[in-house]
Image: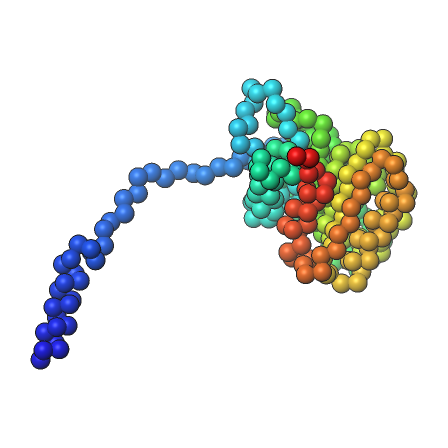
Length: 277
């Protein structure tokens, strides 16, 4: 009996004492969180609408005299790599980190990446399995003649341009590097799908650079072919450009094809862009 009375007294104490009572949290305000802008425009080259996600540095203002480097990110949709790569750019440009200048990031959202990132193949099975492939020439023309001029005419940019591509995006970035290298100042090529068309791109005679380049190539533990091809690309660039290129290669033995990009981009920024104190 006494035990029941004590228990009842404790329950009454808990629910009547204001110390234990729950108070309502009042929501004062709520608004959308934005890290940049979304652009949709009609591409005449590709004959379709294309979407861009644009990260703008803190303090960016169109009336300012300050100009910014531009990082063009393939696979740049919101649900792909745009947010986490923009986060690395923001973090790296903090004054206490100081590995990269404040930069604009242009994420190019995909419509059909197999179509846009691959050149025509002679492999019949790939033609059959991926019937839309082989239109990278159009996409490169889109980047050069529409995308870059659009960004340069609408934002405070300078001449420093970087492209980031992984997997099939790395294949496209490699094709641009070998065929039209002066489209970009810097190339970050991660896990490039150089197996496409039986590694034919590795046999392409590279167009000489007319300006200095920084090139970073990385691959994770992704199987013998992917690892070999990435290293062969590094050797090819190193052999052909001895004076006007800063060239880096990294193998990430603890990362795979799915998680190598984030760490590789951070390391690329440190090696390519880190500013002196």
